[in-house]
Length: 360
Image 1: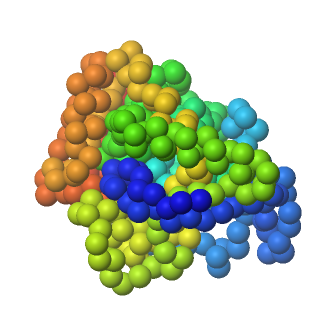
Image 2: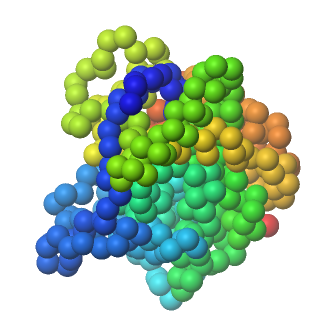
Image 3: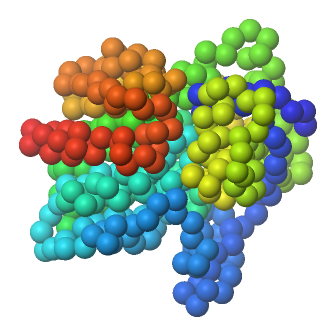
């Protein structure tokens, strides 16, 4: 399959090729022994194999949890709670989704760690087909499934006795911002939604026009025959198998910014090296995700960096959203600053927003 240039994650990136076989998942039992599970099962790993890009606060407890979405795929998530939580009481809860191609051990964990210190129960999730969540073939992309990831998280949180199911909100970082809005538009149980440096993946992909668009859809279509026959799905791999110390030469400014996070020690994770398999291109390029954003009658907060290249997506979504809504600009912050820089992530604003929203 040919190499090609693809607009993804807000930058123009030269994509590499990798393959994943359609096979059963590998996991570990409680003794740390590798076991085989069905394709929809989440993957369990030893604590020694975990890789988080941040230090967990000594005021916060993190627990691995697993639950199934409505399609029967098991989702891997991390539940963050204050260490002094009284599980005989009920607390407000927030779901945090990762950037497009990211995983829960990166930005979602950073946000969850910070918000749990402020009294929230927080669930950081791996999307289906990505990270340690189940689903085959790997690296599959679906606008429907990405929104379902949020609703499935509401399913899980809403049956926990220490969670107030009338006070469940969502935060979508980067690409998850668009999917969180999409989920909230069709799931009234999400009582408030915030986006951080939102990136509307569907809008971005639908902006590709002419011959480039035709070629990409054709490539995605033809790849399905290859995958069907071989049992392997080629996907777009963008980052190295191990973190590097320098940004490669020749990248444009936006791609270099993303590489500074995903390709270097700062944010590198073995489960976040690429994005989607080629067979998913048709879905991502033709299905809008925020058609019904104007119908939301619940509080919406758009957080964006002053210098973020993705700023226009938040501004457009803000213009199309209904009241109550707010656009909050973080001074001197670029796009990836709001992935992990705790000096710039506006935790005070998120806390204020959700506590005010849950009073309504």
